Image 1 (tube, rainbow, N blue to C red):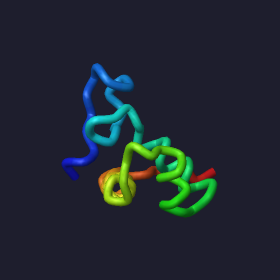
Image 2: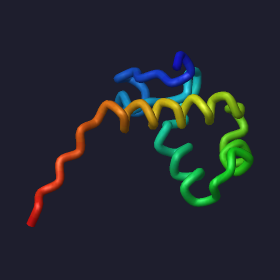
Image 3: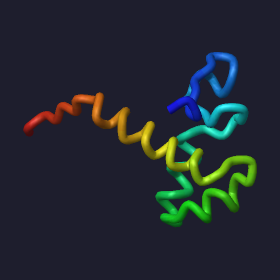
Length: 73
């Protein structure tokens, strides 16, 4: 997880890939649209496949740590 960092001075503290301003959210957006690591790497040539995997692992961990509450209505 040392590939994903958060710094208040970079992208408003949103999680980014270390040494870049590429936000985890941007990586997830490309994956949602195309579904391939290759598409992410084509969009962001400054990162590698391990960075994409780290972004996915980070997102998984965030979801696991979040309790979602829905209102019955």
